[in-house]
Image (cartoon, rainbow, N blue to C red; front, side, top):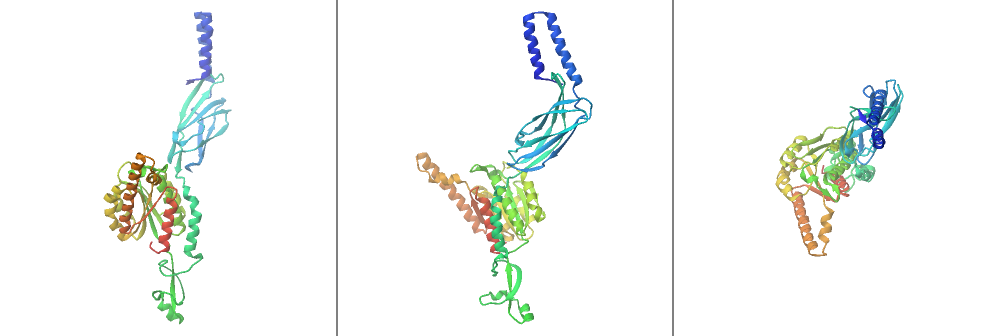
Length: 430
């Protein structure tokens, strides 16, 4: 049971009248009338328990886009339902309007739309629906919270999708719409053709030459059906914000663009998220579904405020990449973390795989390094230059061990990583 503002207003009006009358009998009459009205409202209000509630709507939505969820209420009784319906969601779900008014005759049903505008990734869960059924006088209401579970998974926004047409155009050129097949551009056999002056003699197919009576050479194309393992570091370094963007979200965006591009190229893409333990894994997904699977797995990831275990991560990579693969590590060029954790494991990983490390660079470092206004700016510039030099030194150490390093500001990292993948594919190094 709940009392309404109208009951409070009636009680206040009665109190004002009694103050002027100053009579105990009048006080008793006013209280009895008010209590009778409240009791009548509770008796005449439609019961809440028999109501039948169902829910439908979106179960997935990208961050920044609205999601539509509907609640259908059916009144199986005979009394007229005058109700306020409140759908309860966590604050980050961004529910536009929590309450809606409803009037239903007996046997009728109505559908109420609710719009969510989530502000964070992850699973947003409804806590239930509260129905408040008012009486005809509007003094009191029956109230009950009814369980009506529903979950909406908020996916990463994939802002780098705008780069995909350009990368696919480069991929089509690479795969042969404008082919000039030379050895070294790939190691996957494509076709035979007659020998011309300048061809590499190592490409001559002597058996085909014997059958046809002419010198034939093999042509090659960039590899298809290669394996790519994307490793997303969810340790403490992924929790920072760079240029206003969470480092983890920028890495996710880059991973999604690479996944979409590699799947279109015919390569197999697996994905893991790791810090001290495996947080998410997508393995063996069909190419048409791999982007959706990776996106859904990323939705619930959050940074863990602990140092990543490079040894355990390397062991997991080696157990998953049983054949030669392109291992893409989305992490940070933090000097201490790389030198103490990743660098000692690089030789073992690079012996069996092609390694590529993609990291977000902070544009604020370049701004600080160029500042010379006052003493504080000069000290800041010195600190920024030292930090940049340390990152460059670590990147050089990784390259000396055969790791390709891609570092770019948040807006450019997805495109830079896709370009690095296409360059490796064109060079036949996957």
